Amino acid sequence: MSDVLVIGAGMAGLSAALRLAEANLSVPVLEARNRVGGRIFSERVGGCDVEMGAEFIHGTPQETLTLLERYGLKHYELDGEQLVYDGKGNLRQQEEDSAADESPFTLLDQMATWSDTHPHRDLSFAEWLAQEQISSNDAAGAIGYVEGFNAADHRVIGVRGLAMQQRAEDEIEGDRLFHVEGGYARLPEAMLDDLQKRGVEIVFRACVVAVDWSDGAVAVSTGEGRAFSAKAAIITLPLAVLQRRSVQWTPSVEDALHQADRLRMGSVCRVSLVFKQRWWAERRHPKMSFLFPQNRNSNDGTPRFEVFWTPYPNEQPMITAWAGGPAALRFADMSQQEIVSTAIRNLERAFGLQPQALDSELTDARLHPWQEDAFALGAYSYIPSNALDAIEKLTLPLHNTLFFAGEHTDTTGHWGTVHGAIRSGVRAAKQVISTLRRET
Ligand SMILES: Cc1cc2nc3c(=O)[nH]c(=O)nc-3n(C[C@H](O)[C@H](O)[C@H](O)COP(=O)(O)OP(=O)(O)OC[C@H]3O[C@@H](n4cnc5c(N)ncnc54)[C@H](O)[C@@H]3O)c2cc1C
Image (tube, rainbow, N blue to C red):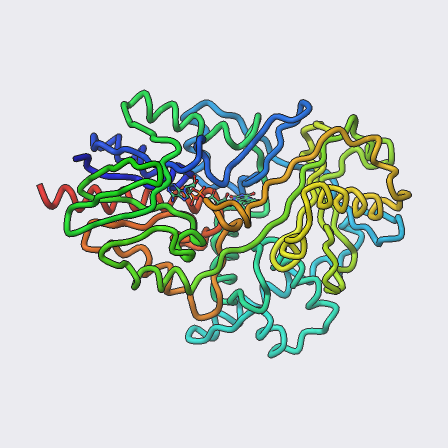
């Protein structure tokens, strides 16, 4: 019997396993895929480092930076011009757009203040906008920002969670963005290498389907017919996988799953477009970073990408198209080819180009269907109104034997991120270590 089973080799699972291995505990890691990293998924395409999952280090989170340093991985800060397009072919720098462009952030500050002064109340973002009688124009900008960034539905996401998240981001300079050189996946790959050197077994293609447990004992079976046992388990299954009840728990863990049900898994549709060259440089925008619409979507139900970015100052000829929240779900019935075409058409329109003008520039495109991926079932979590206590409850161990981790269990305002996932894994590992030490 091992000391601890870790289920899932994303950043939460790998971080937990590393901490447990450092404490000299035996810790097999069971992973359904044939790779580590989970929702970090990078690929080299046409000379570009394409990210299909997590891409940015948001700010300067110590847990991520310490790992990068430990493995000698470099990162660079994103920079360049943020542009706004009007849909008629006019692009201008965002700074020139001052009043309108500041309003989402001004509104979010206003919302955070409301949250501070009403400590016992929570509302959805939509309810809060209505209560504060925010004009429809200002509200549209803020909704676009909140839904795009949080992959969330503004009618569901709660203002308490948003306010806590905003404060947490401010503490780590969350408005600065960084990329890992060579792709984010280099980090989980380095962690895998480290774990294997420490003798930790990572079992790939091990899809956990059943967990039988009692005080101090866990027996896990996989869909491939393998069995594993340990004194405790750290479960880093993504939120939506827990909610889908893909795993059979004996005895039931329904109380914990009920808390998981109170949270939401957000949706994202992102496409990386790889071009022959940086054609936008010849169109007077060599330093383009982000490209935002002047007016946020008209909410007419049309599948549409409105936000784009490049990896500038990295000069790889690549543009990412992004839709988050309800806007992402509008692509649900489309083929990958149709989604790529939509991204290209929307980009042409933003630049005021003729339809198909960019077809001959495109060399490749990548996207990953996170909503349909059985081992993710969505992009990342967010907190509905009146559900902030659910994450705290999910961090409580079950009989000191089952410990939940994963980005959706971060209690510090960093859920939905890679550093939140790392934090949760380290937290769960510490809980296990102190439990096992008490028992010996
Ligand atoms: C499109 C997209 C963009 C994002 N952008 C960013 C970003 O820019 N910055 C940022 O910080 N975060 C971003 N995120 C979020 C970030 O990727 C996640 O918060 C983080 O990687 C989650 O780590 P985790 O370990 O909690 O979960 P995961 O990475 O999902 O790990 C869970 C693991 O469990 C495995 N698993 C699932 N089911 C089973 C089973 N039955 N048995 C065994 N194993 C199983 C999965 O295969 C997976 O490897 C993004 C996510 C997406 C999808």
